[in-house]
Image (cartoon, rainbow, N blue to C red; front, side):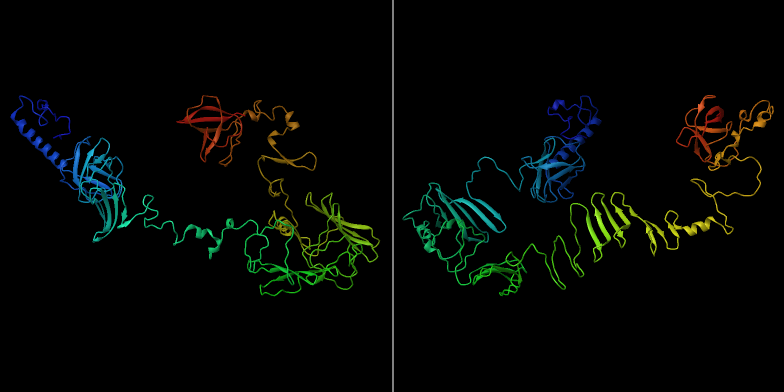
Length: 620
């Protein structure tokens, strides 16, 4: 059951000798005829339904699924399919025949489809080119033409209720007409004559370089009925603003009777003169809430006036007044000192309370009354040490606050009634320390960092998180007993209670001050050493015998010499008497290998204790 596109269908009749039903061979049994005939009919029918628009596609947007009763064996180059489309396309589209896979559908020019090139229930004809399906001759959207298209009649385009017609109206001219389809009597037309005669638009002559000029009926050399010379005459200008380029560079002896408005005025001379009674120059600040300033001359006095509320009136006192007749000046109503009314070589002597605003800069300020500064700071400037002295009325020094420029320190000195230094304190920049030459006393608590020193002598210690009195009360019981502490360790209890056996460590020392712990096993008793074998068994010292560990610590790593343990072997057994390195593995096992803590001393393998296990003995 193969199709015409398969290789077992041959063009030469004599070549169709395949095995039935895909051909007949000489000598085939009669039973082979019926299957062969059925195969031929099936192939003819399949070819018929593919060559003709019998089936309608299905699928989603821009996907066209074509499903035949019998699927083609494969896509074959050159094979044509015809079918009805189930929907318009909205863009690039694909086709899938009986699940053989999506293949792009492209226009005859090989480009992806644009919207509506496939229309619903239109017959679609496409050929497979070996990679994609190409539409054949039924493009209804965005068709493309090449070469010359000859029209023997008219060319009509209808869209959205409008019609465009291109047609010959006689042997020599072509009409292009546009009109509403429902009202063809009202047309907008363009008539073109092939001999270059009159071109009409809607029946009116179109003027161009070939038919204008005198006698043509066209007044295109006029603007609103006026020749160009009318507009070249500046006297005819009656509205608008002239461009800067149209103004003359210089204008001598001109008088302007109204306000002159501009952005910037540049004067190349050395004088601007304003003539008139009380001449003035006003500076208007267009920013919201800003004062307007006027430069004003009146009777030999020059003023700077301010209109702060834009009311049109100048407020007083005026910012500046310069009187030429008296050579005096005032700023906001106050006299300005000059060499004419003030001797700068004398000091400013005032009596009573004086108030000064702004910054006061002076070499010496001497006052018999209080000096009060309502500002934020007093600055003492100088290249060397800067001093603030406190003296008696007789000039005897009693106190000094000064900054030592070289040592970068702030110092406080106290002097006795004779002016001799008796106490000093210094706050240093280098280490941040505060030094006091004498006692430091506080009637309240003293806080240093997180520590607090109370006036009753108690101290809060941040490292202990408690007061010193509480810490001492814990360390000293009701009988006045204190607990010694081990260096770097905890409290030590000396119990009056006899104990059996031998301790692992004993306290001792050599200088009566420093105490240490000693291992009794290292002791050497002189009498026992000279008493034959008192410290040996059959001439062997205790170190020659294996020792046992009696402890219960699961993480113990220091076992006595001779102690034997079993170890888990990760890979292979260790040879007898070979040095090994046991480690703590789990809470119930030791490992040879791994990352646990190593056991102290030298260990050797002493045989196998079972599957995956070695015995290990500490030898030193």
